[in-house]
Image (tube, rainbow, N blue to C red):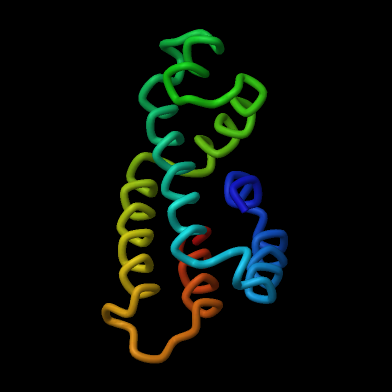
Length: 121
């Protein structure tokens, strides 16, 4: 999912959402949201250190293998710092909804679909 979001690949993201919805036990929404929070947190750090650190230093600073820095570079061109701030707001909102706060009857699949739509657009 992170790779699809980094590339803003809408088709791939929707296929993953479908897969997640068919395997709810393996992909619970709170865990997915937590994983995305970690990814976008590292992306925000990447934005702040981009151009200031070498690849090995950046890798240590954001706690990812240097192999993944290419993905973060692509994602940084697709998501500004302001967009990332909105994404953190969406993640918080949908985390609460997934736990029943402010959500009486919407399924986890619909919540995920809605959240990913907001992230991508």
